Length: 276
Image 1 (cartoon, rainbow, N blue to C red):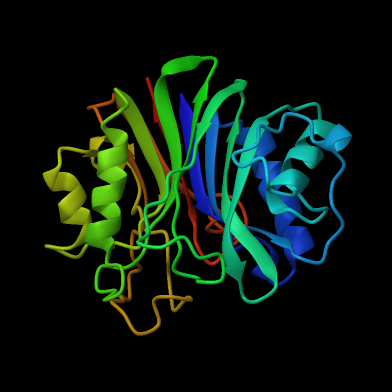
Image 2 (tube, helix red, strand yellow; image 1 turned 30 degrees about the horizontal axis):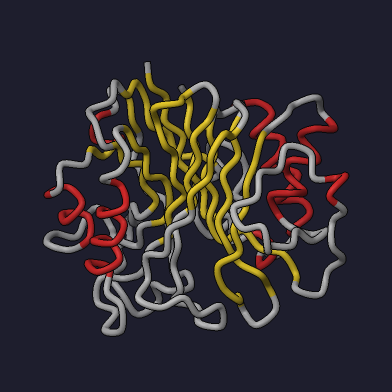
């Protein structure tokens, strides 16, 4: 099984159309079984996509409207034009930069059979950029496993710290036997006694640590939104992670979209793991 996670930054990126093309071309070569995406945007003013054009779409919220420039819709459409089909879901969570519906997405090669979208922030306020939810799917090929796209807040947030959001996340996961958490945890693996160590303390397994073959694991280099006044490292930080509720047999963990493995498409690099 091959899993990919990426904080896309999507429509916020300069040269977006080229980066969308690069992203889709990489997917066509790698063909991940499940893809977890964060910061998946659409313009609030863009035209709505007719239901007849939403091939493979499984709603996470029946009230959600998919618009023409929706990042995951465009990626799935371009892949379909190449003869590659993904089942997909998207959940708008908050208003981003005052002009985007921003949310999470999951794409799967196997048909999505069930979707869950629990709230993990203290409040559910679409106008508040700190609102956080999870987006999870169960597929036809992995009926006993759940795959969640995750984008959590920061450890030191006084309004709704990481530890509280993690507790809500952990409580929700108790209803599943096997779970993969994939995404932007905003908790550097290098920092002790904060978010990363909290997850470890609850017996979750970091796929990077489990992997037989791995690289640096660094997913953010330089200064990006949300981290300008926080912990930084000249060598970069590893905040995009893939965790598993059981000790999976992970063969490899690779950083992608870092110019060494496919062009940069976001302010984050992506992570691909392969299991046996």
